[in-house]
Length: 213
Image (cartoon, rainbow, N blue to C red; front, side, top):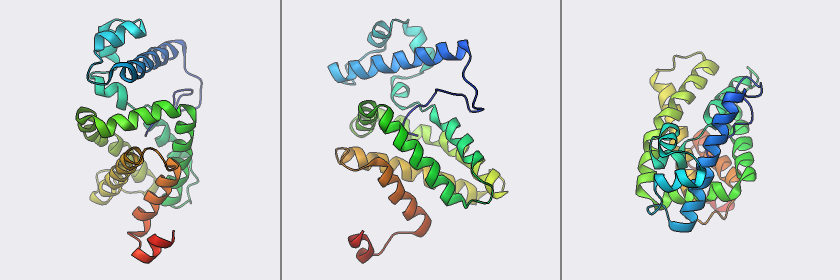
């Protein structure tokens, strides 16, 4: 949920030529955006500048990313995460499946491009428009998680309990990401995700327990 992984399709097959071109274009737009933001700041970076740096037209940028905030936030790993959750052993407890999939995904995303991940999360903290758009995008990830939870538990994706579980997880991961950025990315993000999932699974620890961990 924090980084895009597009090396393979959800079915495990390599992407076709058309899909590879789309991936390449999206990556070029993102790279151009990150470079310009580092040079000029977020507010001073325009779609026209991004298009020129990425060697595409402004309309192409807008076609791939409706807003500048979407360039920062759009996360193509969500469908992959859904497939990975589906592929976990049927008898594995749901919290354990989530923990294993998310820890691996977060660790891989930070390792793949740590500078980009840190920039994205810093912008979530510093730029109100990015944070606002992030709040809007939570519903998309939440619906995907509802589907995964429903499939694993045999419940309807629209059940209140399923929706609460999914959105609690999405909201918790968002706060974890913000916490990481607000604290200068000092901690290991995968470890923070572990702590987050423990709180969701077992509740808030007592003061003594929290002090000793």
